[in-house]
Amino acid sequence: MKVVVTGGAGFIGSNLVRLILRERPQWEVVNLDLLTYAGNLENLTGVDEHPHYAFVHGDVADRTCLEAVLEDADAVLHLAAESHVDRSIASATDFIRTNVVGTETLLASVRRRGGLPVVLVSTDEVYGELPWQDPRATGPRERFHPSTPLAPRSPYAASKAAGDLIALAYQRTHGVDVRVTRCSNNYGPYQFPEKLIPLMVTNALEGKGLPIYGDGLHIRDWIHVDDHCRGVLAVLERGSAGRVYHFGGDAERTNLEVVEAIADRLGVGRDRLAFVPDRPGHDRRYAIDWSGSAEELGWAPVVPFEQGLRSTVDWYVHHETWWRRVRDGSYQDYYEALYGPGGRSTLSAQP
Ligand code: NAD
Ligand code: TYD
Image (cartoon, rainbow, N blue to C red; front, top):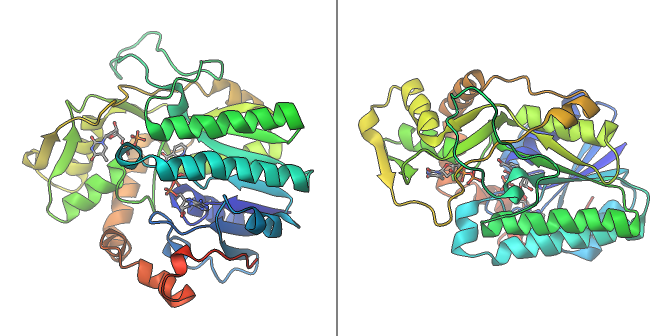
């Protein structure tokens, strides 16, 4: 089995590549990644020498590159994306290019190649926001269901929804074997420190403030990246074409609760919490019902949030060289050593 993972140098992709090489020792993995600011080959240190692993520096919007990579592939796990909401608010251009055009280019290439399944890793943010509900309140809770209408609100979510719907359309119209996953907020090792949890941990470790948008009562459901990656593999191995699968951690928390837990783990005083102006169009709450997918796939999250958060905070404490290099941008030197000056933007297909 030869699996192409797009975006395998990013946060979830690199954890997925590691999981596959660890738990599916017969499989071969080809990591197709453009190495944008979020792609970092240091996320794969130790993996790069594995005999079943190959890296291709390329773009999912590049048809020629895709044709070469897909030639002898058996499956595609499509994670490559622009993934940060705040960046999409600053400018949505790259989001449309990769998440919409790149996804369609990939689907068209798979269609021409024929016969291989694609798991499109989408997000619960395609559903928009839910009304606020106290995470601690008992009783019925409103959650996203696979039948909930898509109503994305940020440019990021809208670009993911477009790619997600185009993928389902390719399945219905052209019979391409596409399976879509929609997952809640991931956390864990190797997450780029622009997202809430690694940003707060690294700011705290650097003695900086912890910026909380608005009133800090926005709610996210948190899932450990390992649980999500196991779900993606389950979809490839036991899922069906045209289906939408949900993954979540059953761990709804306000941002304030998450940041306070991080501060407590690091022994940082509450005086470092800084309430800053809210994100425009900030979704109030996400929560996802994954029961149907669990039943169909035999999947369930196993990492309890408080335990996973502690181990994640400790991971950043013990990987200071990694995050300092990411934060100051010097990890890009690593690319230059591999590809030469400007190598990050030089597209090439070298499976
Ligand atoms: P990330 O930003 O950490 O990584 C994205 C990766 O894609 C990077 O390695 C980047 O170099 C690569 N990439 C970007 N544009 C590319 C292109 N045109 N061609 C090839 N590679 C390209 O993202 P992540 O958090 O690991 O998310 C991975 C996927 O999971 C995304 O599709 C995202 O929408 C989805 N998702 C993320 C979360 C989350 O909480 N992080 C939750 C649900 C779904
Ligand atoms: P983020 O990690 O960007 O993920 P998403 O927007 O995709 O859910 O943000 C998670 C939550 O944390 C979201 O409600 C915005 C909030 N947030 C802050 O309060 N401060 C910050 O500095 C960041 C990056 C996010």
